[in-house]
Image (cartoon, rainbow, N blue to C red; front, side, top):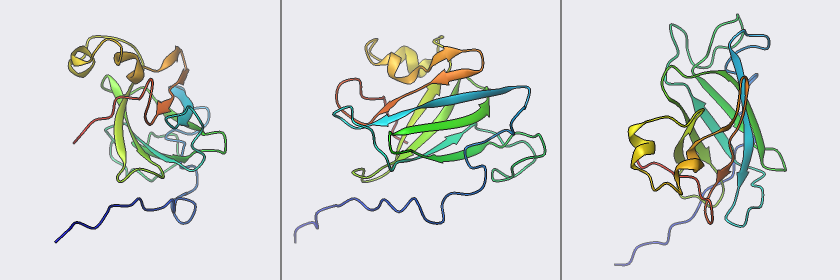
Length: 163
């Protein structure tokens, strides 16, 4: 008996997945707000216009992850990419050294997971990487605005984690 070839599923992200303020983990004007933005790129450096990203802070406090507004922080956000592959999240600095980012995109058999570090500092995962790969997990910028591109394969491919 031979295995049935695998195939990708989707994209089906445009229907039922978006919800109001999905990319805003904190409301506009929140005193600790930062913006994380970037692009999702394929192996040729071309934008992926129909990817879906989920950002996880790792905590939600005493509220559900989908609650928005009222000045509090949600631990989860979701953002689809625009035609140019861009995305944006408004969040706060994580309590730990990184933000967790999950990417769903056509051509993937399953979603991929990575980390977004807002600064380059000692960390067991970063320290274990080849120095040439380390920058693929570190966002550029400072203050309240950071940029992080996700390259799905090829030169400069983002480091993805296997859980």
